[in-house]
Image (cartoon, rainbow, N blue to C red):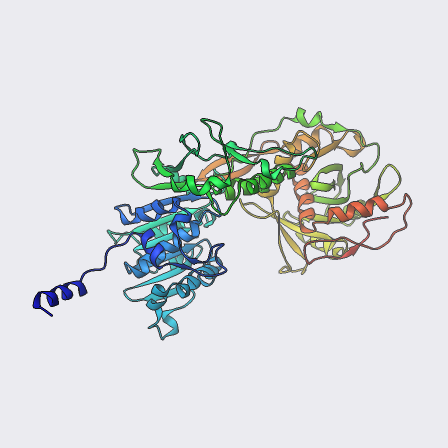
Length: 610
């Protein structure tokens, strides 16, 4: 072999490895573990072409990128590809931040570790680790770097390490602030300030517009949307939900084959079979060109794994249920849009006009009764609500029992009411299935005493807690002096649910009925009390916070309605089964023990029929 050839071979041997973009690295080296994705095996950016620019923008001068995305578009895979690239190609100090420590641990075990094991180039990085401390659930070290997988709820961990690469995933579910520390995102960002070449990904599905972090960040960005060309006329546009069209059968059911997306220019019917073509030919367009921070928005309308008909069916189901939470989930998870929580006021005249004559205790449609009790210094106030299919509800009656709660007399009156049976027009009778009594006032010990001996009747003490995101029915505790079952009621969520249902104008799921009979005490005082609060936005320490504020002095009708709703959520019945059982009841039925089917573990046998 000649000397020049030897020289050339040497040059070839020491030739630096070509620099790859993140998408190129992922296509060449990333493998998706079986069971973690609908398409395991080698990663292929061509399957989701819209992810290419999101990943490759990190190879440019950009140091902070925002992604506002729905579910099922590969947003988690974007984060994992970025993570893998900086582990293998550009070893760095990395933090992968999840909303909670539990979610971080789960993510480490179910997504990061399988990715490392499935991708040989990543597996090789950890082959030399012999100590357990080098590779734990929350901290994994590799040559010249490490990845810390932490929860945003742990301030000590957020402030403990210098970070060059930060991936903050699902930021809309991060705590609003940490005690004495503030915003967890800002706390994590502070760990990157020493790196001139820092790289930050902020990614999430949005929640409500009022408190969405990802929307706030996206508004600061250049707001890029993925424009696709119409397969027929070539017009470029962004896929929007209002473009999806469908037809229904005579029975109201969706005709699956009728679903299509309509081109806004030529009305061409775009179907799922067109997706590979229009995704491949799509492009990202900046809509806020005066801003420099890259920001991307993508919805599941673009997803190769989601069919237009599936989205139409989910939307129809959410709309039919009239359940605001289902509609919010569709808007957030499928469209990647923030939910606009309607907080407009309701006029009392609107509810007055909805009063109707029951002509009996219980109108047809009621299958289950709950009660909510509020405790004042000189009285107890009790509201009884009937529930039916789709959580359609009927206000049965509202009662005030005057007396000193430190004595037994007023509690005896309440006990008689909660033990009462209520009649349908044909004589069938129904007893109260569950009740909640507020223990948060001045008479906590009396409430505990009353409820402790009535646990078998599912009459429980509760405490109301404010705060966006709290479930209506939280867990119970017996950590109190009386050792009673004390449930937490998320009052903000309950009030929002009730007000959303008060806005409904047509009878059906979620609709609330009001009686005209004067003896039921559903009068103007009651209606004003039901509308006694409104949702207002306030600024505390420079941050937006939505709170319910009283606009009239007496809000017991609203509070007792919240507690009655809480009782329903603590013991959610099987309405379909109850419908059959109530229909089969004879007009005169002797007391018998019936079991109410509940999705929760706390179930007891009580007299609900008589």
